[in-house]
Length: 297
Picture (spheres, rainbow, N blue to C red):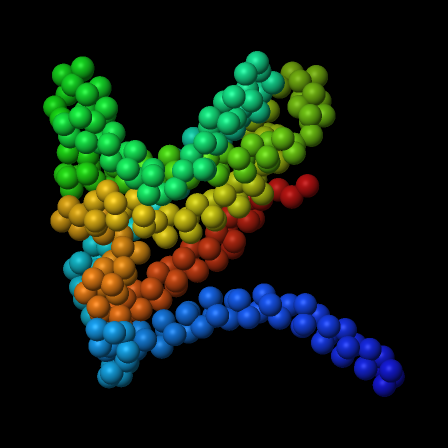
């Protein structure tokens, strides 16, 4: 390589860095610095202001894994993810398949099915809190018509996590529906026409054409849905405050409580790093095992 070529490459590299500099600054300020600061604080005892006062190594992590409250929070978080991710994707896929059919009025249903995308978590929580109200809520009123006793949807520890899960499913439905509908519309009609000539029915088309061709989109929404479920906060804060009896005290809400209510910033930072590790592991596992079944065109 000549000196002129080397100088030219350095100029191109410098130019590229200059174009990337605004994004790098934003990432550093709002992503990299907070992440490393959180990791740093997780090894310290802190004062109420969040300043480190005493280095205690891995003691914050050890105490967390000996804490019944934290272990219950972990268990509730995993159960919550299981109860929200799978139903959300199945329902969104079902609605997307229906909306993708060339039927009269399908445009209206596409708007209706995706409407939850424009609702904030706070508004959604208030809507469902009203629906789950023990005295004037619509759900208990419908149950009473069938002679079913009233249920404390957000006050009973056996039902609170289910209620939060239902709210979260509805909140995430619009996003997943739009993504899956876009994936369905990208599948060539020629494939379906050819299968009809061969005598394939709807279910055979769905199993042998729709699912394989939609697999990249399904893989994407699954990864995003898992991450979003682990990070759910707004609906929990408004509907249950982590109760009753810690039934909905998911790890994100536990981090919030320790950091801003109890002022245990060191413990909260340790929980945040554990949550980061959990999400990272789940994402890597999905890429390692889930991507094998993805059919790229």
